Each structure stands twice: as structure tokens, then as C-alpha cells.
Length: 518
Image (cartoon, rainbow, N blue to C red):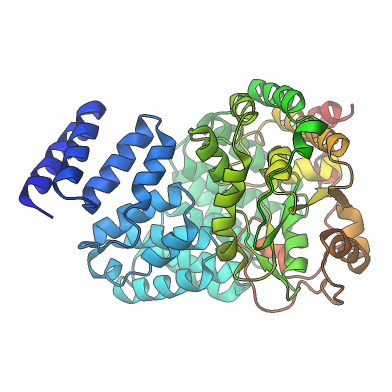
């Protein structure tokens, strides 16, 4: 690094803070001319290019920093955020294990690093960082909370509860911990947090995320103890506030389906890439709360299958192909742009990530439910890919969506009319894939999966070309990690009594039933 590069970088930072993106970009480029590979300028230029819509170049720029020496923990953190944005999983896992992160990073930043690692299923690295960070910041509420989540994902309910209580002791307004305490186990009349949740709701600021967390937590606990009238009122309050905090427009969903039907014809999806993948992805798709986690948990017991969890790995390749970020997922414009995309390039770049996603195993699961939008594009890019579609009763699925507080996804799920409309759109999209991709997508009914798990999973193995293994339905086995909303139930064995929960709220769900009836 030269003094000239440093001075130019400082000028670029001031221009960026003043929202003068053109000047900032020019100054970052001059800094890199003065000192090629200068990490602060690389990170700054990548950030500006993202703001200016140059997605592909922004990605190429940030990749030049991978493997470079970083002199300050703040640079490690900033580069980690950029790598997470572009779904560069392997590089992200490596950089966030830099021991200098612990030297001077604040507790909240370290907690965010733990979350980044956990979100990509880098579970061992996440746990090591969380433990080391807590040794340095033992009273930090954010670190206590994320450590509790890791215990929860590992099926360690008592340890998770202890961490969540410690979080609230350190910061009584850390309402996420109250929400998670409700989720760790089924509550009883003798053991619950209902009174505390009600007191917290009396103190919380109105119309904010804290009210949402507490309302959903109160709904869960009142439902567990059989107070369904009170549980409904808490859920209605949470949904009402949350809907005001998110943006959702059903119109683009209809436009997306129309674009998919126009572009993804039988001829289009049959014209496949010739790139061979070193590891075969098994895409488990469907609605949220339809059993995708349960099936992944079963398949994870197979010695030839790695469980990658919920990643945006394929979305990341679409974004590079069309040179545009898709923060809300696939849209109609993206589908039209993909009609002329280089699917060999998409397949090659996805293959670059496949070894890390699979942890070296010949097959791996990709269980992001919303990949149901991407089935046609995945099929064209990767003819080796397998698809499993989880099909669950509409009311069971939708009510489970309604009463689940999602993080950054499922913005359709807080109003009954919008929820039903989205479900109907999802069914229409899957009907199209069945038409244009016969025999590629295996439908697995959730009711069959829980009633006859061994027979169902053997069907899946046959469809995927996996050797027959007995005993995969034993999802209560130790090991593995479940980092979704199903984490609490996934280790309890195959539960056969999870259907029909909505009947407790039949009178309040008339709108949902009527909208789904068609």
C-alpha cells in the first residue's frame, strides 16, 4: 500500500458518504492503479459497483481480494459481508476464521459473523467462533443469543434455554430471545413464559419488530397450553404489525408465472447444458412448512448425501448471468433475460461451489423451498439435478406459514388473502413444471412421508439414483444440524399429529379457506 493509494481511498470514502457514487468509483479505481489489490479500495469499489447496478463486475472485483493479506479486523469483517452478499461460501468460511477478528471486533460484529457462518451451514466454524467470542465478551447479549441458536439447531434444548435466559438477563429488551424461548419446547400450564411475555408486550414500543417477536412468542405459548382464543389474538396482532413492516405486492407473482410459461417451454428445458457436475444436487422444493426439512433430515442419514441446507447458490448464478441483483428472488424481467443466457457458464460457476456444498459427497441436498421458481432454469443448466416436490394439505401448509415468523422471506404470509393467493400461484407454477418436465420432478405427499416414512424415502432414493439404505426415517438420531423454523420438531422423530392444527381457529380462518377452495 502506498501513501497515494491511501489518500485516494480516503477521498473515495468521503465521496461515497456524500452519495457521490461516480466520483467515489473513479477514486477507488485510481487507488487501485496506485496500489493494485489494495483491499480497502477493492471492497469500496465492489460496494459502489453494487449500488450502481454493475453486479457482475462488482463480484469480479471482490473476488480479487480473496486470499490477500488483510491488515485489520474491520477489513476481514467488511470483506466477509461482501462475500456473503455474493454467496461465496468457501471463501467466506475461510476468512471468518481469521483469528484477528477476535482481537478488536465488537461483540455485535462477532455475533453477525457467527450468523453468517451458521447461515451457510459452516456449523463447526460458527460454533468455534461463538465460543471464542463469548470468552472475550461473556456478557454480550447478542453473542449469548446466537450461541443459544446454535444449541437449538443442534437439538440441545436445555443449553439453548440457558443462553436465551442469559440474553434477557444481559438485555431485557432483546425480545428475539423471548420469541425463541417459546419455540425451544412445547410449553405447559405449569411451565411457560406467558406472564413475562404479556409484561414485555406492555412495555414494548408499538408497531415495531419487538412487538412482532413478543406477539408470535405469546401465540406459540398460548397455543401450547390450549388457550386458542388468546393465541389467535396474539397471532393477529403479530401479523398486523409485521405486515406493516414488510413489502409485498402480489402483481409481480402473476407476471412471473406468465413469463415462466412463455420462456420455459418443453423445447427450452430440453436444450440442456453439457457441463458435468462433480456432485449431484437434489433440490427439495415446495412451500415453506411443507416438510422439506423433514425430508432433508432423512436424506442426510445417507452416507452419499451431504446436506447443504437452504442456500441461494443457484440464485447467485442467475444474478451473474443477467448482471442484476435479485434481492426478492426471480422476477419476470429476469426470466425474459435468461432466455438468451449462457447456461454452460451458469453450470460451470455452480459446479465451482458444488464441492463445498456437498462436503465432498457425490450427492447433496439444496432445500431452499422457493427454488420451485427456479426449476426450469435449473433443469436447463444442470440435467443431472434431481427435484423432489413436497406436497402438503393447503390449509395445513398455509396456516403453518401464517403462524411462523420468518426472517426476510415469505412476505406473503401475514394476510390471509395474500397467503392464499401465493399458494395458488405456487401450485400453478408446479403444475407447469409437471407439464414441461415429466418424470424430472417427484411429488412426495407430506401425509405419506409421515405415515409411511420408509416407503416414501425409498421412492426418493430410487428417483435420485441413490443406493437403497434402510433406517433413514430415524430423524431423531444424533448429529447434524437443522437451522430452519422446523428445528424444534425435526429431532422428535416423525410426528404424525401435526396436521389439522388450523381447526382450532376454524372460525377465524374463513377467508383463507374460501380463497383456497378453488
